[in-house]
Amino acid sequence: MNVLVTGAGGFVGKYLIQQLQTENKNVFAVKLPHETLSIENITVSDLNFLNGDSVKAYLEKYRPDEIYHLVAQSSVAVSWKEPQKTVDVNIKGTLYLLDAVRTIENYHPKILLIGSGEEYGFPLDGSKAIDESEPLKPVNIYAVTKVCQNMIGAVYAKAYGLNIIMVRAFNHIGAGQSSIFVASDFAKQIAEMEAGLQPPVMKVGNLSAKRDFSDVRDVVRAYTLLMAHGTAGMTYNVGSGHAVSIQELLDILISFSEISVTVEQDKQKMRPVDVPLIEADISRLRNDTGWKPLYSLKDTLYSVLEYQRQQIKKP
Ligand code: GDD
Image (cartoon, rainbow, N blue to C red; front, side, top):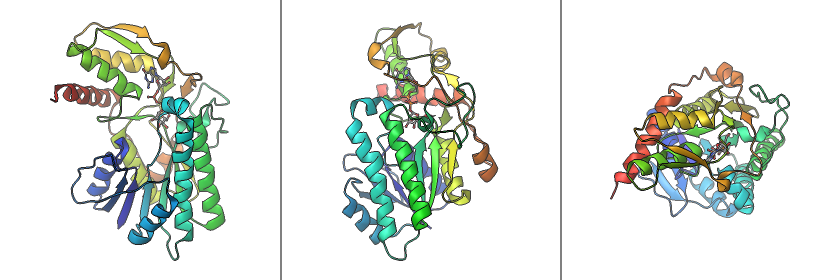
């Protein structure tokens, strides 16, 4: 079985490839030229998803049986600053992929599109977990692009019979994630404080927001289970099912350190709009795949901090 991972040079891509290798899949990976990917026994190519002809030429050449489309501008914070790039990569990139598949003769791969829990925006009842039937009311450009991707996927599945399964992934974290995301941001600051590179003042944004965090290793396992057992044309929430406040996440990370930390709000880190609670109802994922998370939030956060400590020790 030949499997393509797009956006393979990113944080999730590396974990997904490792998961696919444990499942004995033959992995093809595409990434951007400046990204590095040093995993053995995979076929790596550079591919720009903003060039539709290149995307089609690649698929015609390799004809993978399954495609995990991870290419994205994945940061809500960045999308406020770079809305055009977010729209281009997340919407046009997906359209080029699906249209290439549609127009290649006798080619019917299974495709997993990765959307976001951010698509729901402010839920009707803001106090409970959200299932996939919740109306979509995105409140930032990143979320809008993911709603659009989901809708494009649904149209291509229905109109052209493409075998597409759509995911709404909630927050996922782990070692190696960029420090533009909250867990790695806080962990990096702690590691720098421990090394004497930053005064013991933790700069934070909105600590009252509640988000549904999962370990990236659990998330990629959900993706491969959905590829195997998900229903084409259907959307699945992927999350833990339990939201925690950013304050709680910060407290856990600080508890792993000996240093005494003062917390200070940084206005630059506050967003124009931030949904108070985003929590997944994962009944559909559980029912269709039997997925269960294997990692606790505490263990995952510890691995995030250890990674940041190692980064600082590097010459
Ligand atoms: N990044 C960051 N840095 N966020 C902070 C900080 C900080 O210092 N302080 C508080 N926050 C709050 C943000 O306001 C937000 O409510 C929450 O922490 C999580 O922020 P991020 O880690 O940047 O992630 P996100 O929720 O915006 O987006 C992530 O989750 C989505 C699914 O819910 C990303 O992984 C997306 O790709 C994903 O779709």
